[in-house]
Length: 231
Image (cartoon, rainbow, N blue to C red; front, side):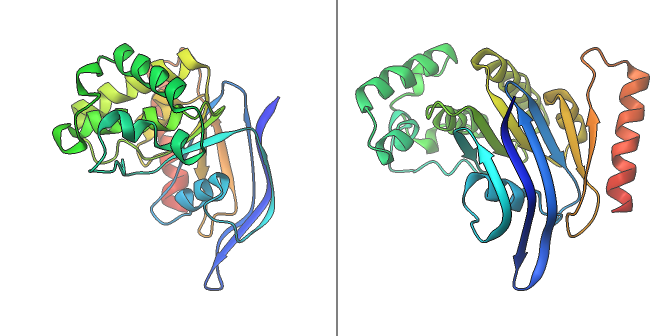
């Protein structure tokens, strides 16, 4: 069953077409990544799905979604627990229940000692974990993640990729992940959608095998790179 479906999405900015007649579907518990060259419209497409960009043509049907941008955007004057609870506060939800859930998440992720610290006291990797917790506290079925690890060093990035995959599987969430990193896309995804052209008018799909061999991995990366370079 599709929990997210885009039909003929077209988006223009200052009369320039950015996205043209794009279709996309996402099933429950599925993880897809969208890759492509800079400026191909990946982030714009994610913002359309998230409801941030509204001036588009086409239709979108979805279950509840949550969006995590590239930067953590933690509020420096609020402590960590208050930052995590911000979506519940804005939606006038139950803050007491939300706080219990947030503290449980922090405890599970070995971040309890940072609950009442402030963002400037955390490392980049910790900030991204907190930003992710703020995203999932909404109990959305689908998570939209826009290059959340792009600014991190290689070791921290790899650690967070494993951490993210474990959390996504454990919570049985679906995910749309934007990245420039093909290795990251392959590791995190069931399917990879590659932007073929500018403007974005076609997404070429590749399925990622569960037990992919080194030969298959090399071929998959080469095929994806070829499309990106030709685009």
